[in-house]
Image: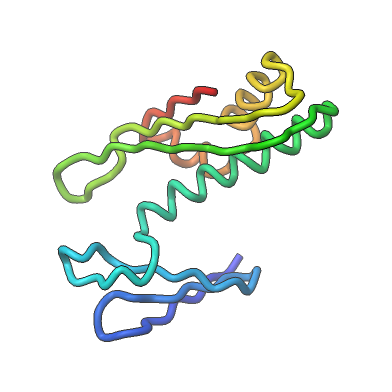
Length: 133
């Protein structure tokens, strides 16, 4: 896996591109000189966690012939005050509608959390992650 990051302005706006060839805009918080031109790095970590979990859960449910009408994940995270300002807690809430059996949804989330999601496996070593649906 390879990623290249290129600075796009005289401040903190950057563009990242990996093996998938899709550019991602990244920027710092305006209070340190960012200009709002992209997602912040810690947001990207939460986006990675959520999308990794989503892929797992959707795949598992579809293999079980569950019919998903809508799928959304909300993630709320707190960070410590001191630097480095790492996450102190993360809460993930799955919102799934359709013909989905609750027991199968709960099992799919558990499998993602405990077995399949690489991002969760990394973060879980340093921060408590709560999963709800």
